[in-house]
Structures are given as structure tokens and as C-alpha cells.
Image (cartoon, rainbow, N blue to C red; front, side, top):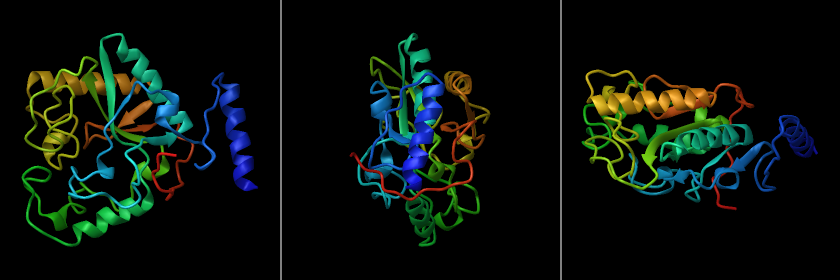
Length: 240
């Protein structure tokens, strides 16, 4: 009953804003699959696969699908429409993250091990939480945070990155997504001129859409007016 009331309230909120809600009965009230809002945004959901810093699928990722709060999905679609005029597209690497996945990542760091030249080249695994690269809690579990980059709509690729995701078809941002290194700080200097310009372009586009950047990760953005600022969720990421 409570979930039904929440769903009705959410529909009323979106209707008042002039937006027709797209809701899925299998998701909590207020959540949508991004593809139901905007199919033009590319999805490259790494934690549902093995090509991520864990080298395996994260707990709770049953499908490579972006799920967000409806408010965040609509805002992200607005950013997509704005950059499409420049022949560009957004690429999302992670969206809603189940709380069980956050715990999984935390437990994984406790296993220890040497630095990983692709993902954390200068930090030991056991130090990733202390250094702030892996969180014991995550804003992603609130449903309005997204890890995102910009790519050319014609899929022209950027140079392969030395740290983080190396095979995403994105502009050059100086590092790949999930490079756990000071180079990933949004304002890090020195960087190649193109990478600096691309980070600025991404931050400005996302800010115009209502998102704020996390200064330690150029790819990490949270909706300013998020609907669940103090609530974390743990439902699985599924395709339907």
C-alpha cells in the first residue's frame, strides 16, 4: 500500500512538471530504466561484466542496464538533447548501484593485493577505501548518481587510456572511467589540453542539466534536487 501511494505521488509530481511518467511495476516507486526515457544514451554498464576493477561481476548486477530515479533520468535526457546538436552523445558506465554491490566492493578491498596497473596503479587494494577511491557508502545507491562520459555520435574512438576503462568509445578525458589515481580528479593538472577541455565540457553540460560533479572523479555526477537524498536502495539491477 505504501509503495502504491508513493507511486501515485510520484506520478502526480511528474505530471505537475509537464512530464509523462514512465514507470516499471517491478521497480520501486520513482525509479525507471533509462532506456524507457531516452534510448539514444549509450549504456556501457561495467559492473554487470568482468571488465572492471573487480575483474568480475559485482553483486546485484543481473543485467547491464542503467536504472535511475525518474527525475534523474529525465534530467540526463535533457543533457543528451543539448549535446546531440554538436554531434555528441552521453555514455553511462554506472547508474543506480545496489547497496549489496557497495558492500561487495568494500569486502573485496579487504582481500588485499598489490596495485593493479590498469585500475589502481599506485595504490594497494587494501588502501582503496582509506584513499577515498572505494566508498563504504555510495551516492549511487540513492538512484540519482551517474558515472558518465561524452562520445562522438559517429563512434570515432579516443586514444586508449593508460588507467581505467581503456576501450570505451569516448572523447579523451585524460584517464578512463574508474582510474583510481589523482589523475582522475576533475581539476587535475597537468593534463593534455584536449582532456582538460573535454572535462570542462562534460561538467558544464551536466551542471546545466542540474547535476553536480564529485571533484575527485571527473565522471561522477549527482542530481542536485535528488528525490531520495537520505535513502539507499538494494534492489537488483535487472533488464525487466
